[in-house]
Image (cartoon, rainbow, N blue to C red; front, side):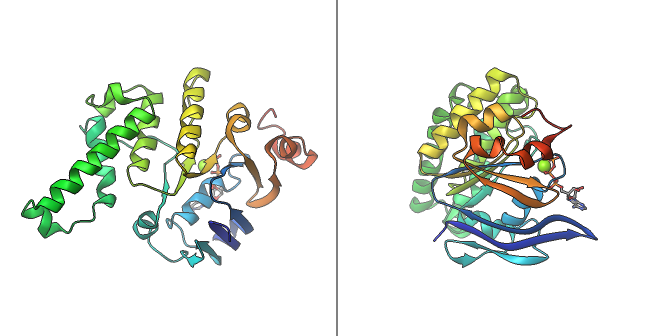
Length: 254
Ligand SMILES: Nc1ncnc2c1ncn2[C@@H]1O[C@H](COP(=O)(O)OP(=O)(O)OP(=O)(O)O)[C@@H](O)[C@H]1O
Ligand SMILES: [Mg+2]
């Protein structure tokens, strides 16, 4: 059984099929690259899986359980977490504070326990902070822990977005163009981190325009064009298919 499964999923906006009849299986432990020209439905696909949009038709399953129809917070709690195409910052928060806000999802003690500051709550909070610091260390942004998140460079802010998503302890992480606006060095920093995250046992869905980044990290690639899946398989093989090259003509150099 695939970890995540999309059965014949379609999303219509009026008459426009942003995503059309998509069948997709995501296996545990893979880094699945999702590519396609602007407007081909990549972000819509992530919005569907994470529950921000409901499919017009079709169903989505996670570990055999139907998740299409659940709210985004319910899906995040099940372990499917996403980042956004632009940086999301919490006003005035430091790096560690931003991560603590994002990790709220992970707290299991109830509010009354937090109110009386019980032993369980303290133990849990210590564990959460410990996890967050480990994540910052893993992603090589530990030196920035106490800096205001807004003061970080664009590249580091994007890494913080990824770190914050990891704070929710996901089993599937979906990244929407994590290297946009980065120079080569910054992009390679992100690539290394995606590999490290994957080595922790996290399945990754990666939307990526940059072919160098994609071919350097993806274990499989799905190509979208006008909302349809036109290729699915080995990254290098997919990128040399005529229909894939044609889909990119005028928009991208493959
Ligand atoms: N909320 C919405 N309402 C109406 N149309 C939408 C909405 N979201 C997306 N679309 C349309 O659906 C199509 C797919 O958009 P989507 O954002 O998924 O593409 P994308 O592949 O992520 O593109 P990009 O590479 O530019 O990020 C586009 O034609 C877009 O205009
Ligand atoms: Mg997009």
